[in-house]
Image 1: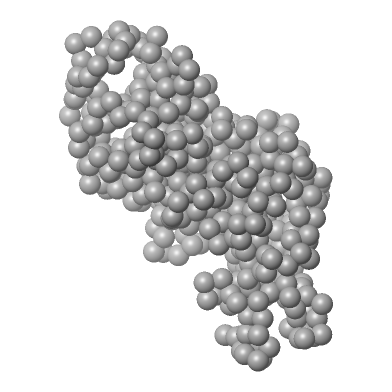
Image 2 (image 1 turned 90 degrees about the vertical axis):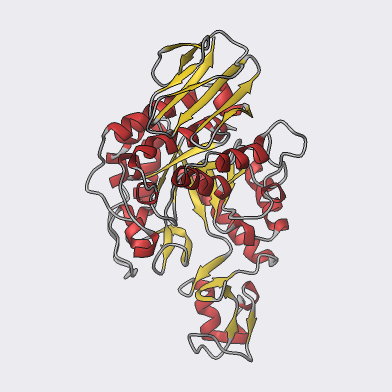
Length: 435
């Protein structure tokens, strides 16, 4: 699977393009703005883009009106087709948000139900009680996602709904040549639906990625040979910033060991979960960390741990935003991309990750651990890489058995000798490849 050796770049298109919150149906041509960022995205080291919702919706993208049409605020299908062509010409894969658990009140089939009620041929596409009422006083009750009536839950056991979704995906592959889907609230989706989705997508395009949004629970219930290829690793997302803020590297290492360690009981060994330090739903990492010196180190952990690294647009140069200020604060439009020392650092980490078999596919072993330092090993076949982090503001020398005499740092290219201990400068990270 191509994704297992890739670095993702996430864009929230409606925010990225500065679209108005309400969809007035007026066609604009904003999505091609992404094409101007291609040199920057490649410079950052990313070779796949995950687009948050791009299809016609009522407001924020997750209340879909039409699965077959690019949101009017972003442009037309032809605009997006042109963009995907340019991305592919630059060897950048395209993954779209598949919002299949629910639709918006403006979804064409739901509007037909509101108009024709029991006479609508689409009444069984949703979970409806015509004897009840909704928060919108529709004179009928319907199931909304987690009680949100602007998000109308689809009946994913209905064959017509399933066939409609699958036909739309086929259209996306044929029209835009997309390379995969990120499934919104995958933890809510019917398991049989996911299995059929996997089988259908496998038949449509080779190595078509299915990545699920999972927040909690047992990821292996969804990530397996018959369902998803990957899922969002929220456990380690929390562990990364929490470990630095509390100066307790035991927390993230505990999660990494439990997920990917060598013991038989480790839950996700061999899985390639999506690793991230922030996204469109949470505060930016630069706003969470209490010590700015830890920002490069947080990315070093993310790129060094098992999984598929993902960078959220704007965070690669240290943009700040808090979830408490509302979603629009997290999903802003930048006039142009920026580059600074953090951007250059992430570029080096991305290059090291993509070029290392151990970092892409290797298992994990904790080799050295204190409250302020950690060293874990990634090993695959004949390649070994030691990921070393010093979160302290003081020099540190680690003494441990590396079973090797020398290494080269995949980030800097510097040679390293393990004899006499391994020196780590203040606030530093190293990817030592054994030679």
